[in-house]
View: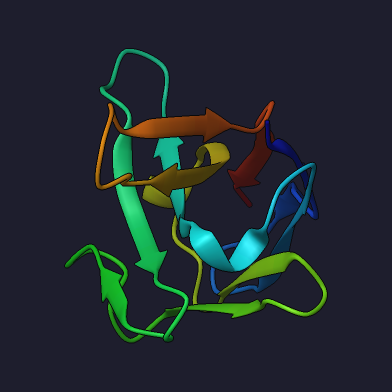
Length: 120
């Protein structure tokens, strides 16, 4: 079992910055691919960024060059640094942990979400 808790969301003006944190507990953190997803009202939940235990990263085209994902396996923590925020970045941001066993179904965990609002 993995428990995920996000923090760091809030209200920011366009062009501003926020850093989201995700603290994990209950399992071996390094065994999981970690990621940030977001969902705006009326929209489908979408992948923002992901990072493997070996620090391979992947970003949505809409955030490349503005957002940076990172993790510290020793601290069981993941971050999303968001710079140059735009109103279209407004959404609930979710921490995600995924594990792919050699035998058995994929295991997937979600945090409760944290609201990010970009508005003047």
